[in-house]
Length: 495
Image (cartoon, rainbow, N blue to C red; front, side, top):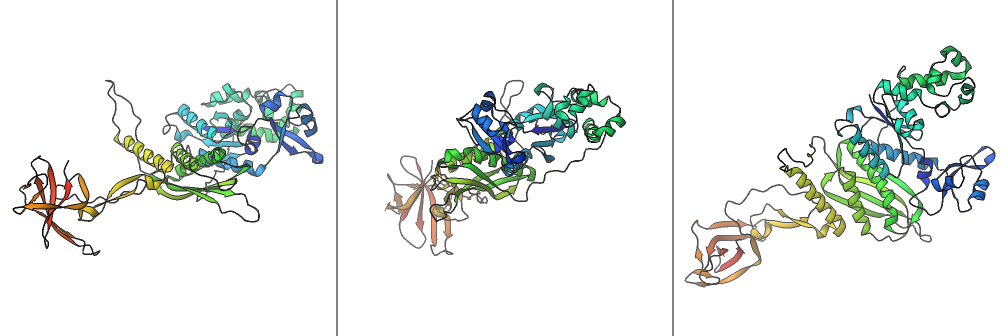
């Protein structure tokens, strides 16, 4: 097994501080005696001397421009759940801990092209959530968590048990076991390796049973069971904004957090989104509660790619005018289809001779993604495609439909040739000796007429005999005459 731990030391600040801010910030929590003390300070506040445990009065004395924010455990849990949903695209085995995510990724390495490729993709995903994780990798979950919390950046990865033991032995005792650090420092212990060298019975009698159990799980000497994170049965995630949004660019960061969670939920359910909606919850205006604004995104090709879903949502948001400030967002999946069994397209590349590979499947996906983006930017009614209808009448055989609509079922091709251009209305032609005239006398080509008789079912019946005719300019025309009427008509031109 190979475990990947994501420790989120800045989660209390990231949960309540949205977007860039000019003022230095810190997170406050209530201490004994109901005194508010600093829990976490950002880089600007820390540079001015604001440290955890400092009272609010002392912090403001050092930095009058400091912006204190109250800790919100509920928002932290919701953000951690969104991160767990987003991480579910890499493995279904996800564990939520205290400011921690643990992922068992051994079975996912081949799928993502190896560990380094998986880590790059995971970092992009977590960055899109606005989180700054510390990473730990080890064969056991507890070891990965300890490395993520306590190890330096260059010593937080261990692929083998020998590497894991070496990395764990070097961890400082004060960070791994703060409760016993003072006692063990008094007898010369500074690292976990020093603790493991002590007699187990003596350490257990002095209150070290919990520390020994932790070390046994970390080093793989004892079972280390975990409770897996279970995604919800339906996707409908809500995120409250810390500050009201007066325009759509202020919604971008929160919306992308929800999109990352949606992409992870779709991946672990083997589904692709066909349509989803972003609901904008507005502030009340006077005594009247405004209804939420719904932004519905429909995809021509179902997808679970976070980049594509986010791009479509951004395009749709850019065309939206807010009727009132927004205080919360909800992303809801409206329609989904199963994508299990759909093979992923290979990346473009070249052979040894330098010839480029032609991937028709990838080209089709790129074209459908372009249609989705144009529909989101211009509106679905303004991006259309021709769809074939099962109707023998030429003017009814094709119709314009939205590009994101599901293509109609294929219709059998006509037995006779069809022109490239149809006239909006059939054009009445003059005659000479029983033959039609169009730029001169027309000559009917051999092959006999094609009779089209249809429309009795909707009250617009036609019964026509169609011919392919050629004129003096050698252009081909498609002409017909009614079976029960007189005269010739021009209906189309061949390319």
